[in-house]
Image (tube, rainbow, N blue to C red; front, top):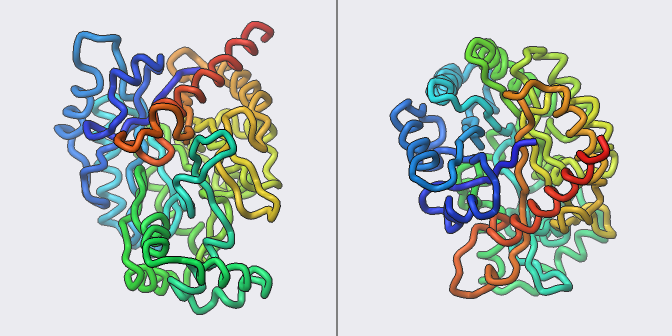
Length: 394
């Protein structure tokens, strides 16, 4: 498979030379500086390609976009948000003109990936991303004050959440608002204040799972027609975490969700970003079986592992080979699919959400949560070892 690395652009504290030294050859990036909903131009794409692919050192290639954000009005209005869909198509056309033809995107309403802790300390002293149910409930019940939340949590969870909230300082509250409501690195939603958050939730009051799924189909139908013409592969990232949040539906959380999507829009361009960390949070998801079932639809893979905690809802980012996912079985299934493909269409994967560890723990060192150099380097090395070992017996 083809080794990729997510890079956030010229301001990323992990440099392109760092990526070269890690051994990855393909860059996964996006034009994060362009406002959500505004079409990307060929000139802007060419400039990013020049930065990634220019220079005398070991060559890199920009091959995957993560992500072109899907504007909020598309999720709320579907095909009626024609101007936003047209702008998305224009961005795709600009990328294809520059030979960037794998596009990752998500369809999560209001918030993108969601965590409650960005620096949760592991027993070995490294730091990990974590989703803690009681902290999240404290946010919903006592900071966001979502009215329906009190009917969705058991009395026991509400009591624990109240105890957590009562122990918060103002700095703790500000931190949780930043983590949940602000746009984290790679997020494809806008940062929100608490009043804006409430207003945004209200705008989705009539949107249930069936409506949101219909809007995704209405978005994809024109997008896929053009993608087929351009030779572009679209990869829908799973919900993270793969369950409803804030009373909002999430429609890319299970094998059933993806089957419904592929049945509704059977275009060859319509594919999945196979994120083992997101899908692995849901105990019912059999990831090796999903990798085999959806193999031809996997245009891109995020290989990381999550560990579900005792309550079945909380989880944290584990070492790449030691979470709830049978990573060796997943990689075996991906390699089997990869070996069936022609040379130009091999699966691109990237190590995802590495721990903050070693020199990256230095107080003076700036890192993006989940996207440290050393933690991802460890993950890539482990995955590379698994791949090499499996290839010797396949």
